[in-house]
Structures are given as C-alpha cells and as structure tokens.
Length: 288
Length: 336
Image 1 (cartoon, chains in turn brown, blue):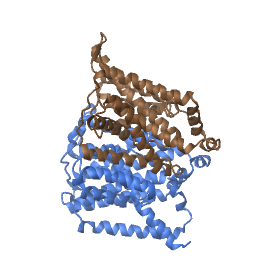
Image 2 (spheres, chains in turn orange, red):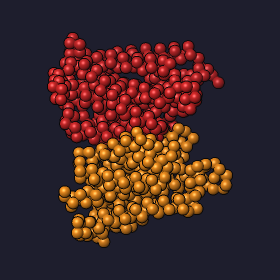
Image 3 (cartoon, chains in turn purple, brown):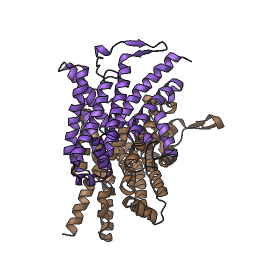
Image 4 (cartoon, chains in turn cyan, green):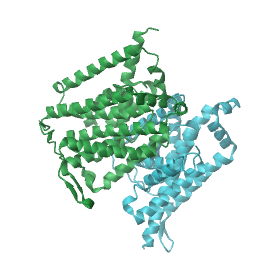
C-alpha cells in the first residue's frame, strides 16, 4: 500500500469536504429561514472566486483583502436578489424559488462564460501561505492546511452564532414560526434578507478559498453544487452541525474511494445518497 | 403546482371538452403541414422535444412533482436505442448475441430499459417531496451522467455516432427526411394520446387529488406513494420514447442528452408553455428549440436568454403562454 498516495487522497478529500461543508452550510441556513433551495449557490461561489481574481488583477488587492471584501460584495448582490425577486415568491409554492434561482444561475454562468470563455484563469497563492510542510509520512502544502483549518473555524463559528447566541435564537424562532416572532417586534423580513445575504456570503468565501486551488472558471460551481445537493440530502437540513459533519465526512469518503477504487470516485456520493434514502429517507441528521 | 389549483374546477366541462378538441385539431393540422414550412429534419427534432416536455409535464403538472433529472431518461434511452440499432445486443455471460435491431424494435427495447431505470430511480426519489425530490432527481441524473462518461458502451466523450435509420416496419425508408418526419409524427401523437388518456382517467384524477392535498388523499384510502411512483415511471418511459426517437432522428446519442442542462431545458419548455396545461409543453418546446436553432451562433447568449426566460416566467408569467391564453378564453366566455 502506498501511504504517500493514500494520505494525498485523504488530503484532497478533506479539502473537498471543506467546500462541501461550507456550501451545504450556506444552503441549510438559507433553507431554514426562506424555505427555498438556493440553486444560484454554485454561481455565487464562482462569482466569489472571480471577485477575488478582479481584486488582485484590477485593484491590486491581494488574497487577505479578497477574503474580507468578497463575502460582503457578493452578499450585497444576494441582498439585492432577495429584495427584488425572491421576496415576491414567499407566498407561492417553494418550487418557484428553485426555478427562479436556477434561472439566475444560468444568467450568471452564461454571462461569465461569455466574457471569459471556459478556460480557467490562474489565481496565485498568497506568498505567506506558499511552501510545504514535511510531516514525515506526507508533504502538506501550507495553503491546503489553511483552507481546512479556516473553513472548519468558519463552520464552527456559524454553528455557534446560530445555536448559542441571542441572534441565533431569533433566527431559530423565526424558522419555527415567523409570524409569532414578528409579533414580538422582531423585523423578520429584514432578518430573512440578511440571512440570504449571509448564506450567499458563505458561498463567496468558499469561492475565494477555492481560487488558488482550482482555476477560476465560469463553470466551477455548476457541477459542484449538484454534489452539494446530494450532501444536503444525505445530511438532511435539520441541523447545522449535521451539515458540517456530513460535508467533511463525505469529502473524506470520496478521497478514500479515489485511492481504493478510482472508477467510483465521481459517483460514490450519489450512491451513498441512494443508500441513505433507502434506510433513512429524512437524512442522517434530519427530522421528519 | 398550487397556483393553477383553482383553475380547473369552476368551469363548464362541455366547454372544456370543446376547447380541448379544437386545440387538438389545430395542433394536428399544424404538425401535418409543418414540413411544408420548415426542414423536416428540424421538424422531427421539434416533435421529439415536444414529446419530452409533455412527458415531463405529466409529472409536474398533474402529479405536482418537479423532477430536475429527466435528462437521465431522455439521454439513457437515446444511448440504449442508438446502441441496439447500431450494434445489437451481446450478453457474454449467457452467450446471447443478437444482431443490430430494426429501428422499431430498438425503440421498444430502449423504452423498456428506460422504464426499468424509471422504476429504480422513482423508488428512491418518491421517498421525499418538493425541494428534496428535485435535488434527489438531479443528483441521480448526475450519477447516470458520470456512469455514461465512463461506461464503455456509450463511447465516452464521442457518444454513439452514425446510428443507422433503416426501414420502419421494413417498409418505410427513414433516410428520406419526410418519411422520418411522419414516423416521428406517429410516435409523438401516440405518446400525446396516451398522456391525454392518463390525465382523464380515474388514475389521473387521483393524481390531481394528491397534488392538491396529499394528506386528504391518504385519508380517503389512496396509497399515494404507489400513484406517485406510477406517474414517475410513466413520465420516465415517455421521456424515454422521446429520447429513443431523438437518437434515430439525429443519428447519435451523446453526453449532451444526459447532461443536467437538458433537464433544465425541459423544465424551461414546460414552464414557458404552461405547467399543467395539455398543450403548453408543446408550445414551450417549439419556442425553446427554435430559439436554440436560430440563436446557435450567439453561444453563451442562449444560456443567458434561457435564464432570463426562467426569471421572467417565475416572476410575472407563471401560467405560461398556453395558460395565459386559456385564462383569457375563459374570462372572455364568462365576463365577470
């Protein structure tokens, strides 16, 4: 057994898992309050990567600036989308939200594809995170270690905010019964808007993390988001911690599959989804 | 979906029947005459996609289930049909070897295989509803896509090319574009007629009841899961029929047919034409496929335009083209 390769795949699995966790977390937060599945999530992740690219190449602002600015910039785009379009759909069947966000994803991806073609644009790694650690059994690139640690930290912070703070308590209450929370004087529509913005910001942040690892390209989000949907179905959207654990767990399983049976690596998550649907249709952490 | 809910009830049934008959005659005449105005080859493709959209509409419009994975039935059936018509069937394990199928048998074989795929995926997908159902079907279709990318029989990136058309029933030479067109014409109206029968059968009525209020349908003693599964399999099978016909028309089957964007397109056709209307999907398919055909040089603009149509339909035009026309006709009939 080639341990070097095994740990290499595990590392890739953890990286992918970070993205699954970040993206499914954003989807779960949005779903909790808006009851829609945000199909634009993959496109917003892609836009995040592009914003980082523009900041570096047009404004000369590096990676760390991008990490701060991008979530707010793309989150603001999300706020506009919510205010002008999504907010008109809350009284209708939830499927209309899915259709609308699917259309928006097509528009964004089509527009970026029109401007930049399908070839990826390179985004260079920040200097402070270049280099590799020799751990004895494998080489660990610093940037990858940073992505794993940072996304874990963001996931846990999000979990903490939602489950352990007063703001989170309002959020959870509004998820259960929006009209009652509104009667207590909480501005629920504004909370919904900001929640959508925050979820979109998380997707954009994931995009910035991804920019130096994968190339920045218009279609980078579209196939990823389908895998993330499967992750969401497996975990169930009932719990924040559930999304995080499922995301990282499935990333690792995918990495292991790549090592032991590479032919199945692109389908393993979907196969797991099918098995979970047979045994526990509401998802591992979901409630009926 | 719930918005059309009220529309179907409060109307005079004899008027509804007359409307449907007249609209059907118009459709029939338009399709009979179509080769006089457009290329028969293009017309044949239009018919395939129109049938695909009708099959999809059976599930969303009458069962209330939004599938985002119908490309798997369309695309897999195209692969099955292309393979059977080109290479026949060889199963090494039991020493079975059949030479290339004649076209009609290739289509039947492909449709049967797709029905099995529909049954397997349907059993998984109907365990959840609404948004989850959409995500599950999308994920399953993506799995099928990756399978097609890797499986040897699909030809990977190349797909299956130059599928022979041969002679339908040994008599009609399908290499003549006009004969091909009327061959697909027959397939389309067979499928369309079947859907019409399904919608108006007691089974179709139960489906509508489930769409409107599932708990009540359960309390009336219906096993709603079985009805939904049956609707899913029927829809998948008819989508398979459209895919198989497409393989013969275009003489190929490729990854484009199983890609998720194909699922998105059929959703768009149905939404634009009018979900839950009998004729809407046909109109939607004609508009979308013509748009793709005439705007093909514009590249990404096709995608952008499709996205804009999605957004406009959802925000301002939820009944779709045919839905709006029907609403207008009804209002004109009964002022106030």
